[in-house]
Every structure is written in structure tokens, then in C-alpha cells.
Length: 435
Image (tube, rainbow, N blue to C red; front, side):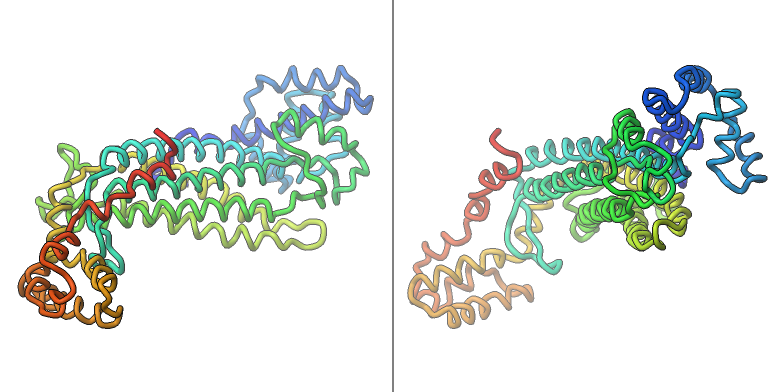
């Protein structure tokens, strides 16, 4: 985790203090269940809770023990025994390390998902507000980076809103997928621990019971989780790239907010660069890169190996912390995005009316001209305008083949910008529902 791209709430989930606290809760809840089943003394289970509930686990002491034992869970249990006393002999009874590690990891991923879902809600709110603000602000739509037909800036943002609505649904599904608990013992047969212990711990930790765990929780769940984060990151990048394009000097239809005192270049005082959006493009690359090792973790040897462990110690914190930062940065960009409607109109007019070429094409075909001939006629008049020679409407009016099919008034009717925006309300209702 890089502090520059980290936020405290998400970072805290992955701290050693949080991890050991979750480990303790798993062990203590398991002891409670075992006590209820008569497997361990109830007084011992109570002592474990009483001593550990408010204990401050000594990270340095645990690390010291681990340097000798070469085993992180044993190091923790040894330290816990120093806190609890003789009753600690009933901790971890019949359990294996993966019961603690996997259940803890899933608790952390669930908590991380909750933050990411809240982040997405924040972004959705910003997108909705700005979309309605610019619902009818006309702008040029582009395909291949080239002027195509008119749209509105509100529709651009509505598209992003719809995409991040799907992102939220995916995050909710990923949270549900990974929210399982395993307290099944070595190779997952419950030979030394009752399945009812697992059920109790799962409920206490806000998880579902893993139907079958071969000592480890199946990693296809985690692959789906990190793949989801990668898809969400790609959506972040898609919107970031749009903003970067719109801020280009030659376009300049929108730009990131430039605060007083901000500086864009160490060399050129005039620069106002889309640095936040560029940063998001880079962060999205990182989040996507974590999906591949998560998928490679699915194939473990037999009932368990630990080839996944080192991977997850890295990608768990890094992917969630990075995406949390990116979503919040994007929400801030959208919230303060500076929009230039006049420049959008200037760009719309830049090609001398060529954005209406399809309407003219259709109008000719409706008058009996074949599509092939109509296309040839329209393109013949469009190409000089593309090269800066004349305007499209005047050329069409002077074209004998066009005038043979259409009157001057009929030609002019195809240059009405409102025609392209007549279904904006319909699209907004589809995206946002009825107002």
C-alpha cells in the first residue's frame, strides 16, 4: 500500500491490529460454540473473552515469537496464551490455521467491499447531479475520435451513471460471493471440530457457512472478487479518459477543477493538466493487474497448499486500497468538473453542419433516391466542407441532384439540432427512473 494513494478507513482494515482482532474474535466465538456443545468448559470460554476482549495485542511480541516459530498463527496463539492464561489451552481446539486465516481474509474483503460500495454511491450521486445539470447541454458525439452526431453532455454522464450502477451491483455480488466462513479443521472433514461451531462463528462474524472447504475456502470466490474490482477499475479509467480527452487544448469542453495556487508544470506557468484523470488511468492498470494472480490462486494442490498466501497478502490490501482511492478521486473530479457549454457549441459548429449528414441521407432515400446514390451525393458535398471549403447547407442547396429530390426548406429542416436530442428524456428515464 502506497500512502499517497491510500485512505485511512480502508487502510485500517488491513492493519496488523485489525487482523489480530479478527483472529481473536474467530477463536473466541469458536470457544463459545464449543462450550455450548460441552467440548470445552464454559468458564474457560468466558475467560478467553474477558481477557481478550479489550486486550491490546503486542505486534512486536507476536513478530518476535514468529521469528522463532516461523508460523504466524502459532505466534498469535502463543501471545494470546500469555494474555489469557491456562484457559488458553482450549483455544483453537480441533481447528487449523486456515480456519482462522481464510475466515479473517473474507471478513476483511467484506468490510472492504462495504467501503467500495459506499464509494460507488458517492460517485453515482455526483454523476446524477451533473447529468441533470447538463441534461440538455448539446455537444458533439465522437466515434474513432472524430465528430459524429450531436448528443448532450448530460447523456455522457448518464452513460457513466448506468455503468457505475452496474459496478455497484457487481460489488454487491462480489461481497456476497466472498462472505463465507470455514471452521472445518484439517482437510475440511470436521473430524476434530463440530460443524455447529462453524455455523456459530459464521453467524457471529456476519458470514455464511462455506458448503465444503478442503481446509481452505475455494479460491474461485476470491478470483471473482478481484475480477470484479478489475472491471470497476476499467470503468473508472473509461470515464477518466473521456475527461482527459475533453480537456485537450484543441477540445477544451470540460476540465478538472484548477484550485487557487495550483501549478500545472514546473517549467510552463500556463499549464492546466488533467493530472487527476491521468492518475486514475494508472491506478486502474494496477487494480486490473491483481486479477490475474487471483485467478491463478484457484488451482491449489489437493486439499491445500499455500501458494495463494503470499499473493493474497499483497493483492488484498493493494487492490482494495487502490480502488477505494480511485473511486473517491473520480467522485471529486466529477463533483467539481468545470464544463464549457459555449465551447461545446463551437465544436459542434466546427465542421460546417456535417454532423447532419445522416439526416440528409435519409431524407433523400425517403424521396425515392437509392441509398447508394444518396450516400454518394451527400459524401460528394461533405468532403469539400471537411477540407474547409464552404458550408454543407449551401453546397447541398446548390447541388442539382439534391434539389431534384428536396426543396430548400426540406434541406434546411434536416439541420435542426433539436432532432438529435428529442429522446434525451426517454434515455434519462431509463437510466434514472421517473423523476
